[in-house]
Length: 284
Length: 233
Image (cartoon, rainbow over all chains, first blue to last red; front, side, top):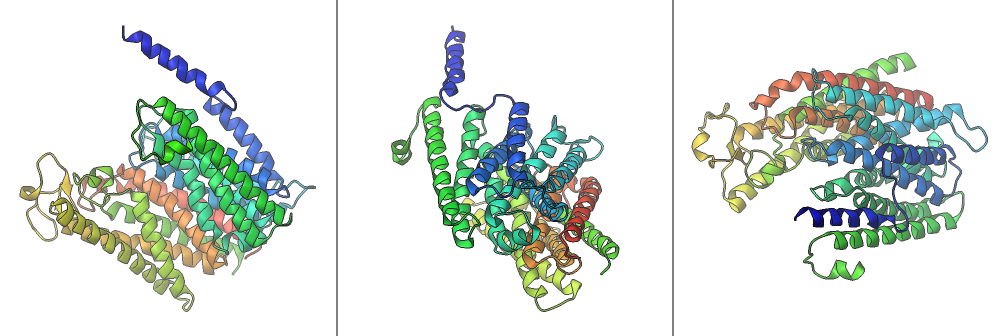
């Protein structure tokens, strides 16, 4: 008797995200799609900031999915730790990538040197995964932690590179250091980039956690990050003029609004009951 | 400095800084979620939040001192002082909240007698819990951990600033990034919570030191590569 309603409920939940935009269902598929799109965008540093922000959203979405994949088994130190690890690796990888781009130069609009940082960080990420998971060393016994940490290193590097590229307007090492790092913006990039990877799963984890719903939070935070980077771009100046910053702010605000609404609607529909102040309900 | 000499010096300093970070994490009393309910000894947050906070405060003091001195010892010690200040205040405030807010006394759950002050612990511990607050031994252990960790972070900062010729901002963010990578690997080794050097989990420290050596080695080489390819050397 109890079986029938449970099945019905599952069918409803599975059918719901079909309307409109959906995320790829498989972790590997999402990794490949998001990784390829973000890599293509990061390779061309001359693009307008809005397109780079799209790449950044994909990169952090990939990172968030890897955080979810590894944290599911219980890290013991809390979910944020692995997200901060990804951002830390991302900063080192982005610095190496920008320095490689400085040496390799660009072929037309493409700067292939940045891939050096991504590849090197993938190696370091994989090795730290091996150290953490090997039973004779730390022995965390988490399935596929090696792959997860490798993906986190890569996603973090691409995400941070795109943030640098949005603010500096190019991936030239000197410009990145001057505009993105020495200006102090790197602190915001560090923590908000980390937030869009670790916060979604940290906030949504639990027995009823659903991957699509968690992903909406990641896109939402990336939208907020875009707004902040847009304001920074207005102050710092961009080769595309003032429109670049304004369009990034509008894009970020729209992304935030759409995914925030979607997230609240999903939460309201999927929960048994809500008790609130009314503030969130009016927005949903 | 020649690029090869710089490689050696930067890698050695980064490895030392990483190892210090790793040892520091094993000494600070981290309670995690159980401590938030007052049912475990330590500060009620994760390792990474504590260590990152201590390292950032340490970097503030270290970078201030680095503006007027070239002494590596002085800069490292100033980083250690900053980290110790942060850790000391956090542990004191945690104890005030536990004692006057939650009404539990700071007591260790792992040992029956405090190894430093020889005070008895067991009779003050609430049954079914794993200790409360930050007892004397954990406090001292935490201060030593912050000293070692803060000195490690500042050492890395100094090496990146002066031997890899990074601008101050890049040196700071790169030092924090390498520091957190090592601190997190160490945090995985202790499984999230530890009371200090008297905790049985402290005996696993060699595993973290081994992993930390290689992670810092690779990070050191990458940082040198950045300085070399970026035209800073």
